[in-house]
Image (cartoon, rainbow, N blue to C red; front, side):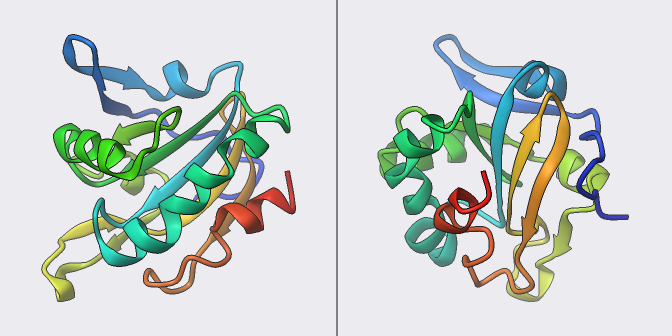
Length: 160
């Protein structure tokens, strides 16, 4: 079942790239006591994610944070090395990239999708959420994974 506004995020462990290499971060590490914009994408470097979705969050990062947001985090069913390369290639300084390589978080939140028709296997749906202290306050899920409209930075800025 898909997570809803008012629900607590499920417990999961992400991988992030730190100064000493990959490290684990739990849902609590990322969200507890913080206001976080969480962006879910089907895949790093995929056309809609790379050209249409992530750039808006890079462009509007300062404006988003000016609204009392502690962090912007992007999660994808990719490994930590791919997400790190994507962050660098996108100039996404100041955005956290949370690797959900086994889709554990996506599945637990009901935000997984079957991309096997495109050779992608299990992936995350495309969405943008406002999470306050681990509780979902806003959740904009795209009906089509190739669209980045309801989940865009511009759409989220209208409601945070």
